Length: 226
Image 1 (cartoon, rainbow, N blue to C red):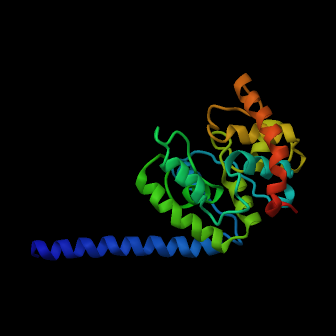
Image 2 (image 1 turned 45 degrees about the horizontal axis):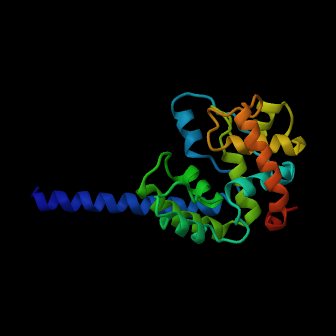
């Protein structure tokens, strides 16, 4: 076979893989509106014979303080944007001192956890945006929050809010207090180092500050209320 033929076959194979990936995102995105998704981190643990504890629950089975804490801490405009907070993204890009903070929304984090890989790269971020827009289009806001809470990692092998509540506080997610909800959400940026059940002084301080902000954010979180 000629070099041109080999290159043509390689290009065809790459195109086939891309189309297959796009089809998987489209089909699974629709399916996950009705069935509980599994994150790439969970799949990775199972593939390497590590445990992954997770009990999926509906948003009605979660204390209201938990999604409110998520909106307050992770995505203040969750109820207003359509998957991507373009204003926050523009502010980060135009920061003269360079991007010192992220602009990831809850849909963008869900897109990463379900269809992409951990770590920072421009390629991953470029893929994250259209997937987040698609998921926000096909899922209601409450379903978006529900899926987010069911795939978030709260410690090595601890996935989902129900497993996190039982692991760290020995209670169901529906029985979490506002303080416990704040401690859990304050751990999300670094769940392997921050332990909600045994918070460091800095972790507790972050949670207390989040509690204060939750009161101000409540009027803007109507889309996740029961």
